[in-house]
Length: 109
Image (cartoon, rainbow, N blue to C red; front, side, top):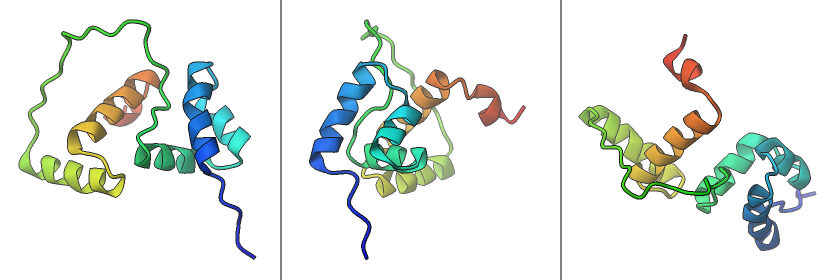
């Protein structure tokens, strides 16, 4: 017996609404009946942000990163798995680290 498809177009349309209402990522996963990691993967693939938008974003703020050729290659490879560009993946990673306060975990301290 096959498992029912959880991420229907209707569910995908609800995710940004829930995010805007302040529903947390684990709560959204619970509503859908999936793991948080699956939710992240599907949202990445469909370019759905799980991060609530700030009320005002400074359009002048940009971050320019210099990374090694190996890092660029790896970013491109990993981004392709989610149908993203390397820039989109880098932005998603930085936003997630910041919003979830994962700095110590990434720095490994």
